[in-house]
Image 1 (cartoon, rainbow, N blue to C red):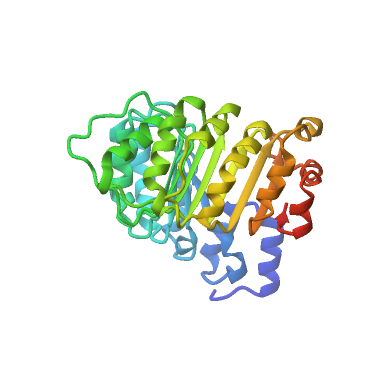
Image 2 (tube, rainbow, N blue to C red):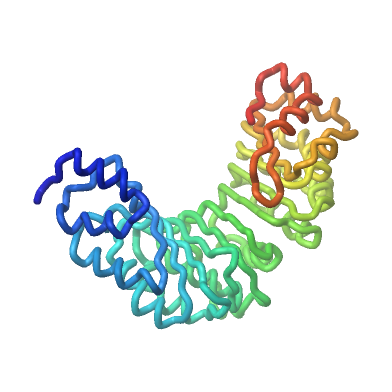
Length: 356
């Protein structure tokens, strides 16, 4: 069949929209059955040891699905599974732009990622590479080796942890196309290594540092001041309350002349004091938008004695402000608390620059 009746397409979608195996099987009946509005059903897939053989069988019989896959998450354990089953699939999915690695067990060794994935990572379409936060690495060298295999890499997201940096006999050259860095890992090793690269490090335009603790603040400050001229957006999320205040008192953002977007996340006590200290520097940078995310669920703890008037005067000079309050564990938004905080900022509220 060249085409399925539109009524039948709707029935299939309505009753099987969560059953991707059935949807994929429909592609074997008719190559053109997928309406354009349904392409997203296969845009993101997760491959495991259990479902990989079945998916490989499906895409080996039809050309309909392969061009639709853009985001692939690999959940694997052991080099044999990764090499024998997953890599052939990745080589067939020629339009995949994002690859996420999520080890099923804490057994990832350097040869697993570098040797087994070397052919797949070299695909020209791959621009986003992500290491899941549950990963455990032999060393930082393992992460860098994988990133260096991607010739067109634009963004690198790294979670997980490692105990050592590793030995780099020859300093690897990260792709010059790399412009976005998202770190939810141990920041000390990663940022220290980046600082050691000096002019070999590609200029980062979009930087997100998560779970910052007090001991990491000196390294974070040093990297921010080094990377400052190239930064266009900066996101800082703090785990320790006093880490935000410590960073604000010591960091110099005067070189961040291209900074357009700034995001702070953490507990109310640390974030409000950090923002109050940084506002003069942010104004001099000519920043376009500030987003503040407060983690908390108790309104009385939020609406406490802060220098609200000074903060209100500073925020009123900004162009746009987004204020979010989320519960710590679920990240469910608490608009009621956000509105209570905004009530302490009458000048900023009157100007209408705040969104939730």
